[in-house]
Length: 215
Image 1: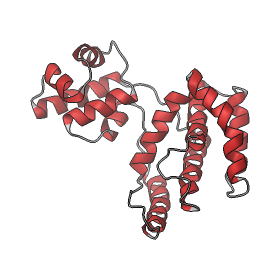
Image 2: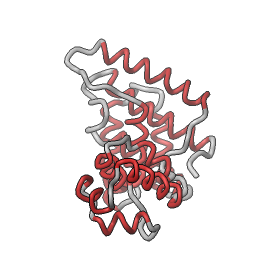
Image 3: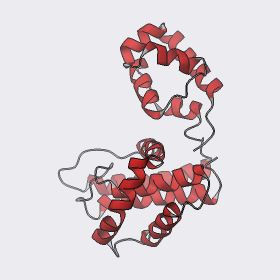
Image 4: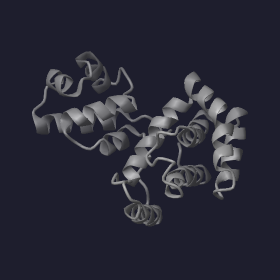
């Protein structure tokens, strides 16, 4: 994950609070985050995690993505990469539009948020255990259904052998955890569309690892 940016997050949060005329206690009531926690986050005495940012954005009535970018969880993407990914997302949206009985959308913003959440979870004992216990079962379920399978095998071996920095392993773990958890952005029963978001997560993570965009 990228370096945490307290000062930038502080500035963005303060601007939003002033715009809404929110005190810390008012933001606490609206977001459900304890006022003492908000105070420590603003003072740089506590790191805001993804859940904090989600709750604060809801309380402020704003999008969570700017808060994630301000905190350093998501880096700005260059225009070329954005255009490449947008093309993929447009194709997925089109295929979903042809799928009967499925009306939920699928956006890059949602995918980025999921990756950040899974980065944190994958480095916990529970996250590591989930990957270890479910990976082979999920691979067996879809064996031969995508060119990204070999990349997942390589990621799994690297993650289990702890080959890489904490930031690299967190990113790799995010892709693996997203892959093994069945409750993702697109259900697997929407074959073949249901596995496309898994493949896209792998693509995004591999690109970030290759371009050293994770730190």
